[in-house]
Each structure stands twice: as C-alpha cells, then as structure tokens.
Length: 388
Image (cartoon, rainbow, N blue to C red; front, side):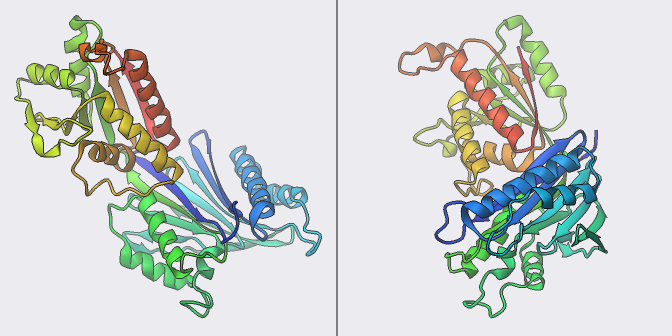
C-alpha cells in the first residue's frame, strides 16, 4: 500500500444574490488514481452551475476512463450549451490527476494557476502550453512528497477586493505571500481551504462579487486509528478481540465504560477518571496507560456523527484541536488526523441500555456506527469494521 494519503477539501462562496454557485468541484476515484476537477461556468447562478457541473462531471469521467485530453476538450466544447448573447459555451477548469498517490498531472484552462506549497514555501512548476480545440491548456506534472499542499481556485479568488480593498484584486502573488505567511505544517486540507476562502470573503466585505471556490489537497503520511466500542457478544471472545485490537499499529480509542473496564482488567492497568472533562451531556473521560482516548460510548459517537455530517457539508466551522471534551478530541482524531480507521464493534447487549429512560439498543448502536463509517468514507478515509 502507498504510504501517502491525499486529503481534499472544497469551499465556495456564492455571488451575492445567487442561490447556486457557478463553480463546481467533482472528485472521482479510478482504480488507484484520483481525479479532481474544479470548473467555473460562464456568468453566475443557475446557468453557470449547469455549465460547470456538465464540464467537471464529463472531464472527471472521461479522464478516469483514460480518454486523451484532446478528445476530452473536443467533447466538452461540443456538448456545452451556447450562450445566445455572447455566442460562446464557456467553462474553465483545473484538473488534478493523481496517479497512485505519487504524482499529480495538472491540466489548467483559464483558471488562475494553482499554487503548490512544499515545506510551506511556493514551489513553481514548469508548464507546457498546448492548443486544443482552439483553446490553450497548461499542463504540468509534479512528484508528490509528504507535506505538499496544492490549491486550485476559481477567478473569484483573484477578483476579491476589486474596487474595495484592492485596485486590481487579490493577485496570485499576493495569495502566495498570504499562504506562505499563514502556513503551518499540521494544517489539514480543510484548514488551508478555510484560510483562503475566509480571506476572500473578508476582501469582498462579506458580499462576494463573484462565485469563489477553493480546492485544497494535502499530502500526508497514512495514519491508523483503531476504535473499540462495546464488549464482544460472547465472553470467551473477549481476549481474542482485545489481543487483535492491541496488536494493531496506530492510535487507540476505547468508547464505553464497560469496554474500558474490560481493557483495564486485561491490560492490568488502572482506569482513571478525568472529572474535568465532564459536561452536562457527557460523563467524564477515562484514562488507561497505552490507550490514547477513553470516552463514553454510543452517546459520544452520536455527537461525533452529527459533527461529521456538518463537517462534511461545510455547514459549520469547527476548531476541534483546541478543545478538551471527548467529542472534540475524537472528532479531531477521526476527521483531521487519521487516514485509515478500524472499528472493532462488540455486539454484547449493554444492561444500561435496557433502561426505558435510555432507549438505545444494538440496532441503534449499529446504525450510528454504520452511518459514521459511511460519512468518514465520504471524507476520503479508508474504514474497516470488525464485529465480535
């Protein structure tokens, strides 16, 4: 398995007064390759959204099937609807074609040139410029290393501040200077996308004059996280399940009081309680030497699932790393840090869940865990589940 992981995140601002964004990002996996396309449709609103959606979907699909770029360009230009007023069918695009997690080929047509950061500093690429179907496309190939960050953007980014903060907009060299000044090694793709889009919003005085989109990629080493929730259904499976869990590489999380007590006995380690982490909605966190996080069980995971969906949809901004509660800590580990997650799920019935005041049964528990697994996979995580 490739020891590098590619994190991705996209954020957009709608042009003031428009319900739909005229920019679209499509991500597609093709075997061991990953294709991401950012397209900016002509104008704004519904028509621009249709143009960019058509373009990005077609480009991602065709490139994923190995169709030559010349044929892709021909097909896209022939398929797009033509504007009756300007007599053009226009949709820009930036393509990141990542091959086996080791190299990326960039195709850029009329979008601002993507910014590549290596060790936090601008890393210029040598583009070759090829005419295809009467349009000039810039092409470059870049070998990927741990820590590399790639940012694509629609022209709403470079137009930010025109006529307000800046006479000529936020030019690309200004964007590079800003990203270099703000960059920190542990920033995720999401954080980088947020940094760029928030600054654009500020320059627009929070009234965007154009659709604005950022697509961020971050190359990170693969990081494993193993999460054990609930004791096995049969007690004679306890030792086998715990031994397997403890043999895995990566960080370890235990969810559930009964599960934590089971591990404390097996590991012959004291289970300590951190009362400072208690809240109105959650009991305090535990601590066992050799385990990175010990939390309450299914109620904690239900909060994590809610945050995961909001995090994925971009409907809320979170700063998990700086918070001390168990939900925030687990969210940070799952969303921001881990690339490969293994759920170890015990199927024992928890006696506490038989209380009519706590209407939780195994079916609800599995639904929460299954939904969380699916949401994490949509984030691009590799997720496995073992049941005992």
